[in-house]
Image (tube, rainbow, N blue to C red; front, side, top):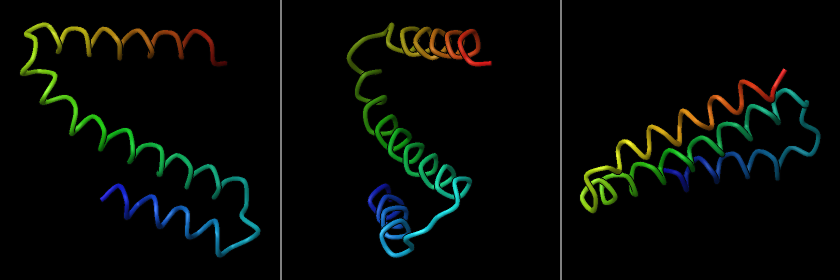
Length: 74
């Protein structure tokens, strides 16, 4: 599924030479979001089996990045 989304995003950029900035940003966000979500879906269950504190570390990392983004972006 991530290969399909990445291929569609890459194919759109390859075949259409002039994209508006808004469309390009939407396609980049779609491609990046799909790759991150697929990676988490495959990695997180294995990590949860390895250690009982993995969910807390995942939540702390997510909240930390969220706070940093909220503080640094206008």
